Length: 266
Image 1 (cartoon, rainbow, N blue to C red):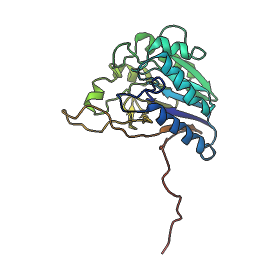
Image 2: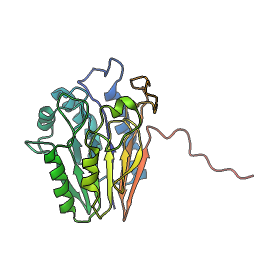
Image 3: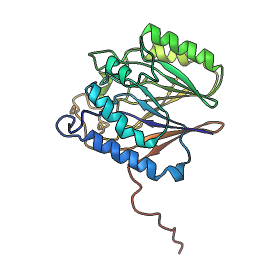
Image 4: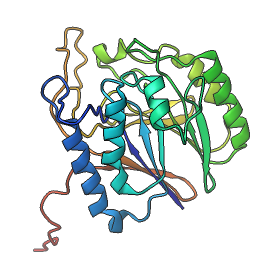
């Protein structure tokens, strides 16, 4: 059995800063890390932490340094991919020990029998995401190397429309190319992403795709064409992906609430 914790859209800035003058994203991530530490005995061991983009809100070197200090107490191998708020050069410098030194930040690693694949959808200076020809070629090659083993495949921008207009306007531009690339994979493949600050589940080319919540904010599920553009200050948690002969994905909330209380019988 292998267990991979997915955290997404942390949007860290330099110490003391707030996102949009309002969100203390560092404090939110710190609380989530404490929460994860408090339930480690309940959920079992963690083999890796996957951060599915927007580690930083401004792509600055100081924000990545701050992120690394905040996440360090987990003490688990870390795997990161960029989101639209990240920046290639500072991110590459901050994680030089684990991501490629040039080109798109694509990688694949084996965690036991699980193949973990990370894809780069960042288009510098833009909010939408795109899988370049190089990245699509990398994906096909990585799936060939996986050769039927279970795959956890991560990208920041969801490869499906979420229904929130202003987020779909900055979504993945070539969803069909992605679907075509994964369609023929015969093994178990779970697709995970971020960007929309909410948990959604959809099937893509016969494979389950799940988006992760953000520790610090969310967007209202509002399908109206004139829906207000903006975020809500709602803290959420993360996702736990377990492989034990099949994938199981569990949402870990920011807290448990009171309890547990015994069931009462009349």
